Image (cartoon, rainbow, N blue to C red; front, side, top):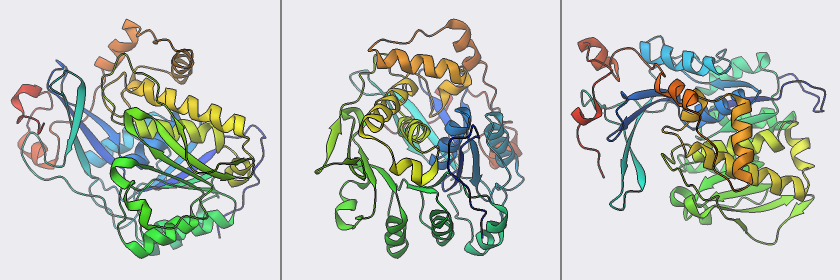
Length: 373
């Protein structure tokens, strides 16, 4: 059994354990003069790193091996304080990689597309592999019950963790991008306190699934904001309640905005587990939503899902978000942007094939195949 945690405000760091997509994000910009950028990413990876950036103890669980891509992902996560204790669960394997192509629509609006094929050598990138349920059973006695358990992919291991942690007071957060195995998906919904998904990926899908036990359900609507419905004791809505997004006047890249929404919302409402989350008042919930939406808007001012973290401290982030909440545009200090431009990423190449042939990581974006707009 995991060790039970007493949930109270005693000055300790809140904790999150997560499993799901942890990947290498390869960001290719057709207009930027900077080299191709590489970041640790994936939904679980981003949410864990955002909360570590905001002062949490974050423990993602994954199957990374010892190749240079996995090592670099681990180093990038650790750079922001993410705990790497459970990142090499057996059997290990290569981390997934996602190529984000940055470009623009015909009207000039920045846009992005995703690919799973290396832009340098053309090899297909590895996909996500869940951790085995047997490995989780062996690990559980050593994992202290977190305030939050987060998962974005259904698997038997994720269900085992969710059941155990929920029984010991954790807030269970599920952010699916697909159904996967239907039986496991139904089990996941039955265990979930906070459910978040995007309308374009899951809006229609959710109509076919019961989720009566979910306390807070959030459907993100892209540039149109979000809608939510709540069964929290102090915030019981009748149907959906909508919230408009903040206007974005310096849009660079919308990738990762949903992860910042999740991270900022959890930072405001989930620091004391399921009990603290259930005690959230309507005023505090609405304030947390607006802060989280402003955090998502802030992220859109930088390239890459977590680009702003490489040129900002947590204090910078709070100040900028506070500025957005006032309806103003945060100043982009030149020295901070220089730090972003100086972000050093991975060794040569975007993948093992590139590494073996020693293809330079600094290949200019114009040499890559045309993005699939």
